[in-house]
Length: 281
Image 1 (cartoon, rainbow, N blue to C red):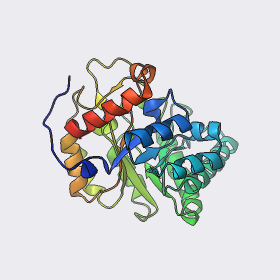
Image 2: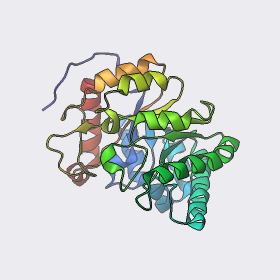
Image 3: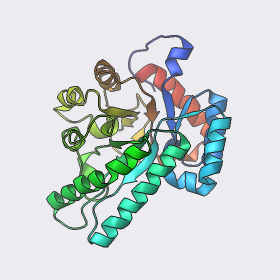
């Protein structure tokens, strides 16, 4: 069942910003996802690094280019905190590889999921995140790649990211120029925030990505429980309007982790994406 108002535009305008975040069709490899987007006339794709590595970087670039798709971002870099200096350096090195992959694939946005604390000291972990970004910025800039800090919902603080609000992400990003570091606004992660719209205004000129899905009630799974737009409680159109009003005009990625979605045919998923995008985004 779909909820919400329907906004009517021309077909081109409807889908010109639509991007498939590849995790939404996790059952597909990169070739399948590229070919599926081409069939569905979805113009953008956001690959995940493990899918690119399975296919090979050069082959991935060729598949995407030959299909006429554009790459909205590469997911993901980050995961900076670690217990030892050696492990932290390994993570910086991996982030540099991610920058190189993003540039090779033709996107200027590397999404950063910043990582959890290796112990109980969340304050020090946030300092490690800040230090990691500082080390990565000059390298990324040399490749023309911007770093998009994606704050996650606070329920992920212990295992995925100590950056759990748009306020924290903005604070980290503001240490750099907007053409170096910005933020990624994912409605699943930020919809709950009582300061959300102030923080979106604060992020003006720094929003490097906008991700949509929905928060199901009850939430079926902490990680793999996101729903199609309109199936949950997020006022996606209001958040979209706020992001638009501060000047974001880039692609809109549909990013859904959900076992039920992953178990169905990918082409069916893409049709659902298009239908719900029109009605609820």
